Length: 322
Image (cartoon, rainbow, N blue to C red; front, side, top):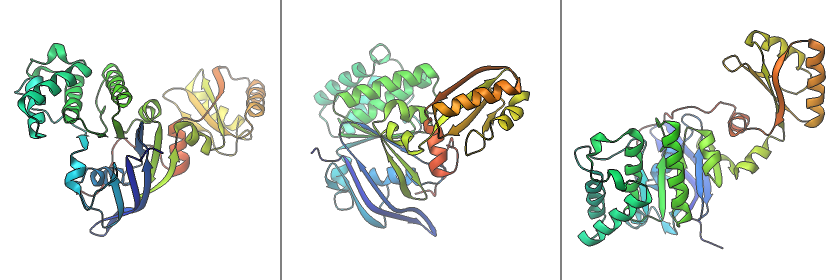
């Protein structure tokens, strides 16, 4: 069996009186992207900082590529790359100069740094802009260059902390393709993201953290199966009809329907599947209100997140500063 890239057992971390990690256990296998999700203050950023050797846990065991993080942090730093939430590149230098500088800081010779830089630029599709000043780059180009800076040292594990925050859909898609290519070429990835669809698209394994512990872990499909339910989704012709639709479908599922006036949508978790959709269609027909669409689907990761944490996914995390 391939050695896990990350093994965490019973991790505890205190910041004053705040317990950011409360016995966290997580196993990330090689050859895939592992996504870490969690509501505000759940502990995911603290965990990533511990993997990156930026903080030391108060208790527990943590290893990266078989290396004990507490005993040999300097060895861990040689096998990881880190790309934070904001592009940490020098705007008054060219893209090529940025990567060569980082490569030299990793201890590569001038020849190795030049060769490694050319390889990373080609891999990320930055050849055409490599000799432009970074201050002329778009946000998407800066994020790709920042990703390249974390790769120029050829890490076994790449830590990505919300890598696509603030990017437009096209730039996000380009960065997703670059990350997939890295994994295909042998780089393991630990990803935190505020976009649950991003985790669904990229991750082979997802760990949901809450109150400093992993409360659910598995493939996207396995997590979606956790709820044991499917979802009926109705799109109303008029948002004003949503409350009436919810009352008409109150007996179809065990929980209250969720209404979204902005998209004219009603969603309702159900256990009976096809039988429930038949009952819903009959109920709406008797109500006499026109709807544009009705269907039965599997739950999204957002709905799984809500089910296991009791809170919707948040766009930012607030944890104690390291």
